[in-house]
Image (cartoon, rainbow over all chains, first blue to last red; front, side, top):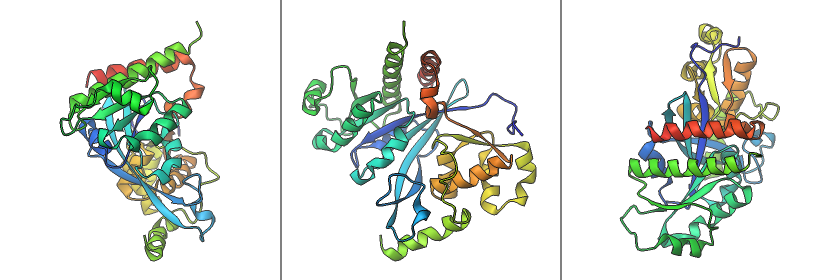
Length: 194
Length: 123
């Protein structure tokens, strides 16, 4: 009963989270590099819930759905990388725990016209000690905010990588993912006892 | 969302899990993969339609969240059905190493990240 349908090596799933405010371009970012059109999946939740699976316990609670967009990239060595966009609305922050659990790291997308929209995501990943980087989406070509100004405005630690990216452009997104995993790797290596 | 609409959404998932909540099963990571076993593939017609579809869609490995999206049902429902199928040997769950990062030693995790990095670079 142990064998799967094929005898090839077992695929290994890994994930990266893409966070940021509503409408900042998370799904665009995912779609630029995903090998499938980004899919939308829903979890049923109760307003009072802290998880997604306890819906049926009490039919009188208010139920709602929280949507997550995701994409997939098959990598060599049988790795499958999933990219998860976080739900935009603040009231769904508890879903972030599930998304962030075991993630390699997170990309926090920033729109410089609405800097405050990314505060919650930055706070979350800082507190959780998830490797993250801050990426300014330049989707309309605006580069009028130097990254160091954004870093100062958002009060981001010096060690957190920052970059520009056009979320529509595959090679930009690929470059961001490389930077994020490099950073996660650096942090992982630092934690190995000498 | 109106109350009526919220109730309407519940009918199908509730039916599919027989009303079970999934609280008695271990949580499979959203990106955890489900693979059909040869036994599951040959016996798939004996299962309810949603379980049969999961076996067919799973193939060599399809993530829980992807199954949920493809079937258009909530993630929690897929987890319950998949756990049943796994218990009966019809599918195999390939849990995410990222779901158990704390169980990997530092060197194994760093090696995994190096492979991911190589993979993204050579896209």
